[in-house]
Structures are given as C-alpha cells and as structure tokens.
Length: 164
Image (cartoon, rainbow, N blue to C red; front, top):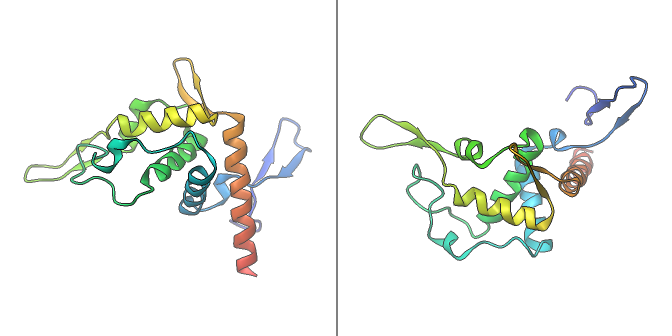
C-alpha cells in the first residue's frame, strides 16, 4: 500500500476517520494459514468428517486433497471469501471453487463438489461464525468479522516487526 499499511475508513460523517486492520490489509495465504491453525486448535465444532480422507473435492480433480489439515484450510478460505463477497450461497461457491476438467477432449469448466463446501459452512454456522440470510445465502456474523479483523491485526503487527 502507499504510505500506510492500514486502510482508512470513512463513515457518513467525513470528519470521523479511524484506522483498523482488516483482511484487505494482509496477504491471503498468511491469513488463511493463521485462521486454519486457530480453528484447528480452538474451535471444537469444526472437525473433518470421515469421508475427507478418500473423497475428491470435485469432478475436475483426479485425487483427494493432500495434507491432513485441508479441511481447516477450506473452512478458513470460506470465512475469508464470505468476508469479501458475502452473503453468498453454495451454488456460487461451487463455481468459485471449481476448475477445468482436463483430459483427451476439449477442457470445460466444472463445478466443485457440494459436500466439500456445504459441510464446512454448516460447521462454521454451528460454531457461530456464520449466519444464514434468507434467500441470499450465508454471511459472516459479528463474531466471524471480529475474528478475521483480530487475526489480521496480529499478522500486520508481526509483518511490521519483521520489516524493522
């Protein structure tokens, strides 16, 4: 960013300004990794189902995901996506997490599997980070927004200390 590491927010009253670290201010991979670690260590409602060891995440994939904590990274990625684009529903998320089907024929876009998105959303909703909005999909709750902002602030402080 130019000048400052923080984003300046303005409300209806233009004189009222404050600085607040948000997920817009940090790199995506840093936030997703930190958030996945937090969810794995501190939130008991989020746990990978038994089928996650063998199931693919969509028809465009050849193998199941590699890594034992991919479920937590998926949950963290969904929280970040809901922060930027929410409220959003499962059909649109299936398109965003989909990919290209490769093979002998011409490549075509394929949607992601629904269970690999719906079940993490249900677990995040049970944990209180997501709420359902009627006919709009799911959005972050106040607790979810606060968690993402808090972790973004911690990451921003660490990057500033490392830069000095």
